[in-house]
Image (tube, rainbow, N blue to C red):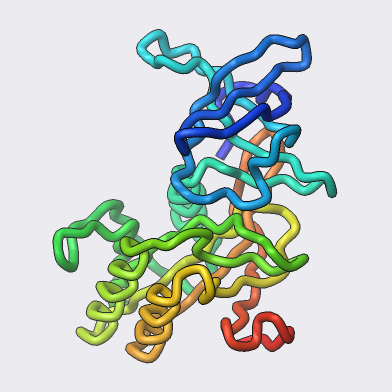
Length: 244
């Protein structure tokens, strides 16, 4: 996935009302950018953070800038636009670049299932069990190298886990796909202390047969694509380094 136009560097002044970010461009111009991220964005929205903005030429848009990337002091990049995760995974699925899912021939998006929900992807193929794939964008990192989800309480995320568990119990494949949208991650875990209910739903889903896949995103200021697979660490052993 390539960005529609070259990104423009800026410095973050503040993020507020969840979806707004005031930034200053390199020429000193102050602009307000759309921030497509409902989460806490812990560690990514500190004043002074280098932000990479996408100029938007649509005259119908109230805001003419979209915040896409945060550049950390280490030089690592993080994609703060959670809406891009599905687009990135969709391209990877279409190109057969997700091991374990490459054999599927059809990819349908936003298919109704569960209790009034829509699964991100429903995969099909000859002689293959249908695969329900739910994608989560991961950007939280409180320990070097360890990406965690969620970064805030998410009742919606817990509901998705319960619905995936129902699909697995019914004989289908059900996959929770964590796309880590930052370039400095080495493993993934559940932030059980942030949302105990989500952690419980996660454990129940795995026991029901839900598969967990974790991939890094390959991020540059030109675009983002699927990257290498990452190991998942059980929440109980994440701090001690144990890998599940």
